[in-house]
Image 1 (cartoon, each protein chain N blue to C red):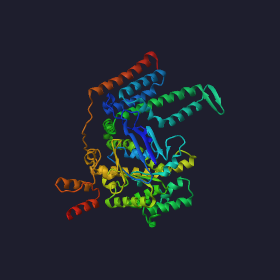
Image 2 (image 1 turned 45 degrees about the horizontal axis):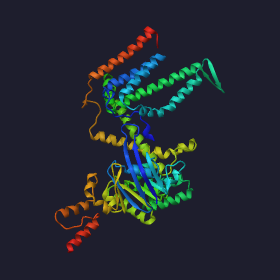
Image 3 (image 1 turned 30 degrees about the horizontal axis):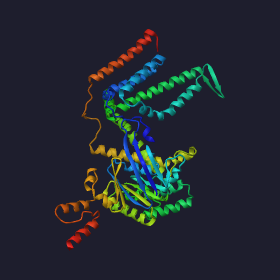
Image 4 (image 1 turned 90 degrees about the vertical axis):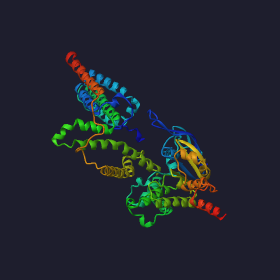
Length: 282
Length: 269
C-alpha cells in the first residue's frame, strides 16, 4: 500500500468558461516496489496525475492518500512527502542553477535539513547511481551534454532518497543513444534500490520493454491498467486514442495479415525475433 | 499559483468589444484615462465607473476573472493610499502616534484608489479583448505618422507585442521551475527576508536562462522566415474601419459631450 487515488477530479480554470477536466474520476492504487508506466496522448492528464501524487497540485474533488494518510489534509508535512515521493519534471535540466554539478545535486538534501556531510554523501551516491563519473562533479552543469544534464537533474531528485520516483517524460528531446542510456540507467536503479518507479511517457516503445504494469490515460481517464502484454492486445482502441504500438507489434500484425501463422503478442524486438525464429525452425 | 496573473493576457470570447478595430480600443483607452484625470469630481467618477461597467459587461468576460488579475496591483494601491492618507496636510481628524489623518488625506486617498482601480481595469479590458497581434497592428497604424520623423514605428510596436506575448510564457516557465524546485524541497514562503531572497536564486537563475533560450529560439525562427523589419511589409489582414467602429467612435464623442455639457451647464465635475 503506497499511493491511492480515490475518485479524484482535477479541473483547470475552474471559474472561467474555458474550464476543462484534466482528470475525471481517477481511482488508482500504486503499490510499493512496482515499476509502472503511464502513457497517454498529449493532454491526456499524465502530468497532472503525477503532480497530484506529491501535492504540487490539489485535487478539485477526491482524495490522494500516501501510506494511508490524506496528503491534502491540514497540517500534513508536504515537504517530507516530497522527499519521499520524488518527481522529476519534463526537461529537468532546465531547473539546474548551481555553479557546479555537485552543489546542484546537494540542493535537495540540504533543503531537507541534512548536515553538509550527509548531503554530500547522498549527492555522491545519487551521481553514482545515474552513472556520472567524478571528473564531471566540479564542472558547470551548463557545459554538459543534454543527456548528461538530464542525468544530473535526476540525481538531484534521487539524492533526496525517495521511496517513489516519478519521471515525467525522461527521454523527451534526447537522441536514441541518450534515450537508451537513461532508460537502462533507470532499470538498473530499480534493480539496485528496489524503489517504486513511475515512468510517464507518450512513447509505447520506451515503456513496453521496461515496466511491469501499464496505465493508459485517455482524455483525463484511465483507459487500461494492466500488464503491457495485456494492454497491447487492444491494438485498435489504442490507435483510436492516438497511441502507437511498439513498431515490432505492427510488424507481427502485418505478418499475420499476410497469412504467416505468428503470435502477435510480441512487444519487444527480442521476443519478435524468437517468435519468428521458432516459426522458421518448424 | 501564478496562473492567476492575467495582466496583458488575451481572453478569447466573441463579443462586440473583441471585434472592434484595435485602433478604436487604443483611442478609447487613452481617451478614457485622460478623462479620468480631467474630471475628478463625484459626477466624473460615477460616469467613468458606469461607462467601464457597461464596456466590461459587453466584453462578456467574467468579472471575477478580471478582478483576479488585479491582485498583483493591490500592493501598489495600498502604498499609494497609505502615503496619501497620512502625508496630506490639512484639517486633522485622527492622530496615531506620529501619523496624522486629515480630512483632505481621506478624500485624496479615496479618489486615488478609485482612479487607479478604474485605470487598471480599463487598460486590462483592452489587453483582454485584443490579441497581441492586433494590438501591434493597431499601434503601428495609429503611430504611422511618426514614420516621417524617422521613428522606427514597426520595430517599436513589434518589441511591444513580443514583450506582451512573453508575459504568459515566462509566467508558465516560472510556475514550472517553481514546482520543480518545490519538488526538491525548496521553500519560497517561510523565513526572514534574507532567507527568502536566497531561496529565489534557484528560481531566478533557471528563469533567466529560460528567457535567453526563448529569445534565442524566437530570433532564430524570425530569421528563418526572413524577417527584416517593417520596410515594404504588407498585411494579411489590413485594418479597415467598419460600421461598428464608427458607432464606437460616435459613442465616445457622446461620452465626452455629456461630461463637457454637465461641466459647463450644470457645473458638475
